[in-house]
Length: 272
Image (tube, rainbow, N blue to C red; front, side):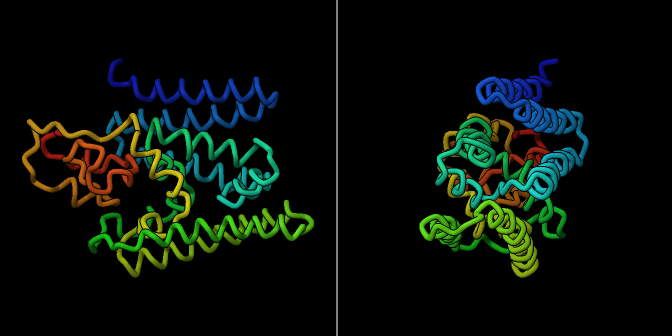
């Protein structure tokens, strides 16, 4: 049972969050919501341990479609960064603010950029494109994400300061239009740069929250240097260009690791 400790631990973490939010907010939705997400993630880790090759994709679809279709389109909640700014401006700790607090601000201290690898509905689609392994060296244009971040904040801020009416309806359409733009830009960049994760590396505003917290992540890919033969296969298959052979927190692109486990699966010496 020792090898199943991680999926059990993840389930316990999410169940704890679910119960605490249910009791403090008095809304059973949070119990169902975080229990579902916890079960999905635990299932994915279990399948990975059982060496099922599509384990991560299953989690992406279970969580990504749930958040995109059910929470976003059916329930009308803007789960993008604009929704976070909206609830932050209104001073309400609900929906997107809770989502960001758990998954993108506090969560990375535990599981780093795991959100990007297992739950993001944008990456869920991009990961099905043909360029799973980057064909070009990483470009130094990650500063674009800060512009996207600022634009989203200014957009929502302008709506409030201009006292625009029916902002909730605008937020719903902002979710639809925003997702359409994310998919269009993400797919275009993937084919132009021959890299499925180009959008994540250069454009996505969410990484502004994720990167600093991921530096302190408890769960990290570590290398057993006594087994490593420096074959370089782990670096070649990494979609985020992370140097996983360096165990320091200052390793190259260390805060970009999405815990996809491709390096672990391809290591010929099981050093990771």
